[in-house]
Amino acid sequence: KEAMTEPATKKPREDAAPDGEKDVIMVTGGSGLVGQAIRMYVESNKKDNEEWIYLSSKDGDLRVRSDTDAIFAKYKPTHVIHLADLGG
Image (cartoon, rainbow, N blue to C red; front, side, top):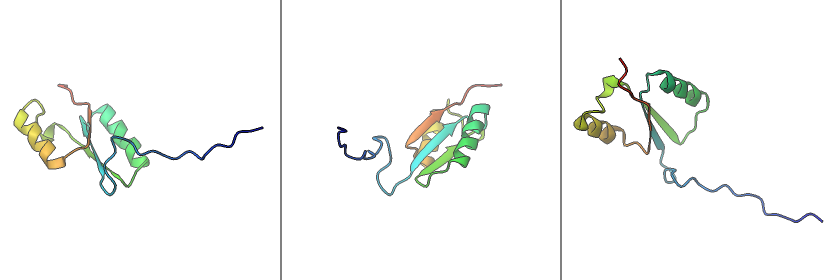
């Protein structure tokens, strides 16, 4: 005999934004090789509840606290993918 099971229910992610709000994912190093690859993937797999921000060095110097504070105040990210480097 097969056991009857309840249908699986999808649990919300613990790190997801509350209902009605968007996840704001900020990618530092967004103009680099990996940042651009993430952008291409995200653009082909869009989700309504996500806003993606791609930063480059033109947006501020993350080594300078006041620049970093200003960036976080402006975008209010819920998640950060940190890919920035000192390149050169």
